[in-house]
Length: 494
Image (cartoon, rainbow, N blue to C red; front, side, top):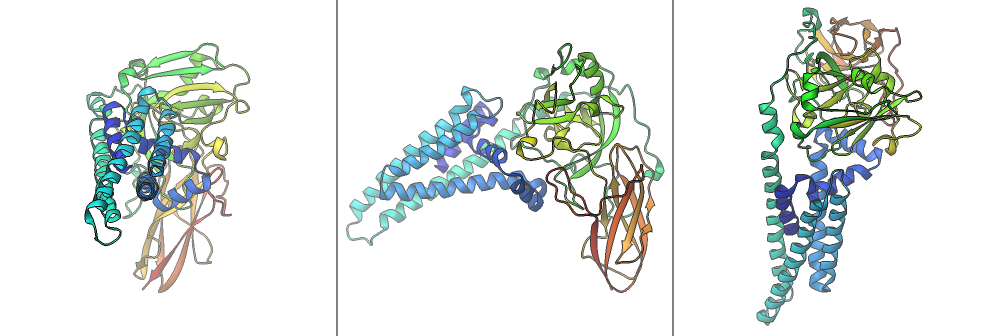
């Protein structure tokens, strides 16, 4: 079975990476997993969640392969039936993915065929060993069979890994990115004020690099989208449908803006948040061209891989700089961050706004349509909640007595942060120093000079937004619309 999977992965490289049975099965796991399990995986492994899913599926296949081998040895042809059933599950996962075609079935069919053939060959060889060993100890054939099966499984795993490496290396999207020249912005962002950055070791950089920017999405295989073939359609409850291609988009007056994006799965004090400089076209202008009809209150955005997000229409038509982004921190969008085009919407969690590889904006109603995550128990509207985090010192670290700089970031996108306070143990709250704000759509750095005395201490941070509303102190889980609570750390002073 593992050898069949390896053959299928190689064939998927040739035909279409998205037809991979392994990755199709992994995507199906993501689709059907309950929210609590998704959050447990992200909480434990963060942005490594996809690797965990892939390895888990591969291990499951290996276990089922061993089971099929044992069953086939004892009661043929039931081992081959197990291979057919498991392969059929992979086939179903592959042909039901967004953008699938008849070609998507071929790798899974190859896996089934190779798995059944190899199992039959190994069974015949084990029987031949039985007939020749004579008085050899009982179980020799079984051990020989398992050794051969193990070798086949190893080859399958190597082929699988090699196939994925080759697939990633030949992604046409990277060549397209290298050839892409960013157009000049019609509206440039103001320079970052000197007072917006605090010189405190260990604090999060004001602007997050592309390589360090968090990535949480449902795509196990990063979609490879040719910009020359990309198009975006505005459909649904509109006076006129609008379609633009990549050249059309680049010809429009693009605007620069700093925006902090946050994942709804970001637990209190977590790192699933980042701030970047984006270049793109305001979505409100495109919607004006289409003319939303009366009664519409939601835009259902759709990715090339079938993911959907439900964004309030008002968030795409008000004065915030919700854009179709083509660049991130002065470079074309990285493939994993949505190349060639993604949505960036200040003030909303990514699950209801930040659609990558976007291909459609459907103007509709919340009462008429649901999206990927709202179908799985999450709130249909996801405004970012006011929050704050201690970056330095780290939790459970030891520091020396005297002045210790406590620092971090606070955010309330599209509202702004006006105050940050720090509490030591159960003492009164003290004001921290706030760095200057770039805009209401980005996080702000803060620092606090703490006179540390010997012993173990608990440090807690809280923020107040620009409207004078304090941060919610009661703890709540990330499901269904984002975590609340205050970030605390323990520090040992000696």
